[in-house]
Length: 249
Image (tube, rainbow, N blue to C red):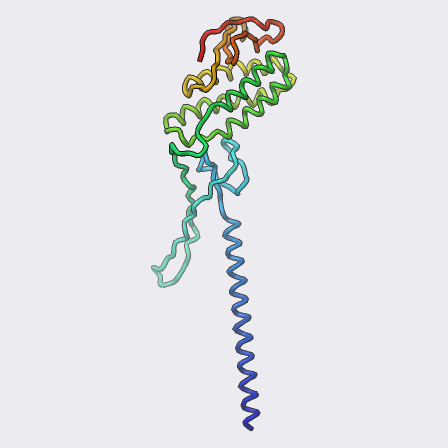
């Protein structure tokens, strides 16, 4: 009789342990699933336009930069007014604010913009529409990669006003390889934007503001050059030396 009692107690203990193990396994799996869902729902914001959010790796709809800044999400509120634990699913999402500081690891610089602009200018002086198109696409990308974190609010506004306009002209030049007259029309406006940019933020290299009185249907147009020698981008080889230096930066 004692052996039967001992056997029954042993079986009962084994069954109880087995249930506990299964229960812990289910709870662990549920936790892992919840973590996975949270990670999938993580949003990221544009460094220059924090109001634009989406999945990591997507492009900003305003400037084309990659969404890399994690968005801070508020926890859903708990309504205990009726004695229950109801959750309010109307949670709000606030984009992470990108603060303007003077200690950015990548300081603001116009050097890359100027270098790409000069590549467009040099291609046009050689009547190389495809080379100008390639440089135009590069300039467009460079504008989108500029770090403005070290600028104050006023400087950033002035920069973005110039950059938005210049990007449009760079895009037209980049999209119209083989149509050099159309490229030169947009180069007139792009050169004005570059002059404004250099006057506002300066330059680390010696540059010259050149002027051709016959460009833009005899209205005259400027361009930026890295050499004193006149090489006209508006007429190319046809009138390579037409123009004069108006200013040194």
